[in-house]
Image 1 (cartoon, one colour):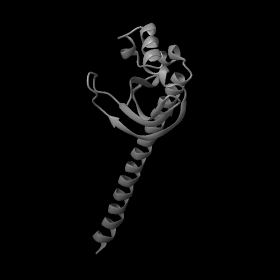
Image 2 (image 1 turned 90 degrees about the vertical axis):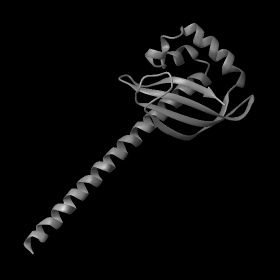
Image 3 (image 1 turned 180 degrees about the horizontal axis):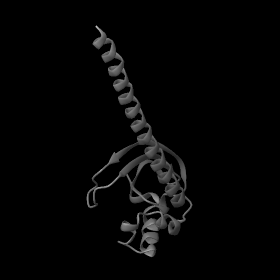
Image 4 (image 1 turned 60 degrees about the horizontal axis):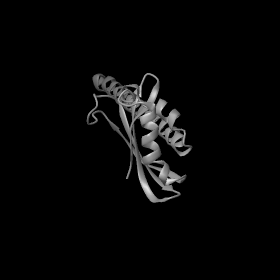
Amino acid sequence: MRSRIVVVPCALSILLIGCASHSAARAEKRAEENDARAAALHWLQLLDNGDYEEAFEWEAQDFRMSRTQAQFVRLMQARRAPFGQALSRTVIGSRRIEKFVGAPEGNYESVIFKTAFEHKTPTAERVILIKQPAGWRVIDYRIY
């Protein structure tokens, strides 16, 4: 009888520790998602303001090396500027990715927004970021 009395509190302790550790992991994941979303929004606001030079600086170092700042600015002027000002933007969702085509394994976050532009019907924007020592940095941007 005594052994059962000791086992029950131990089992409850193990269960509570497991739940607390799972809860902490979920909270950390949620914080990572929120940080990635905030970085994506900041970067998109730079695009909205036409500050393409600064947006280039927010790209991941590894990916920035594949093109010059002038090339990035020309790309954004051709690809993004024609849509005009963003009138509204809401997060549709985000997803953690460990493998991204053409990139090494890492801690990536894909964030998708529903955006209405001045000269384009509501559309989706996707920003993919990678977690680096300096924080979340952009590696890919798409407008659908």
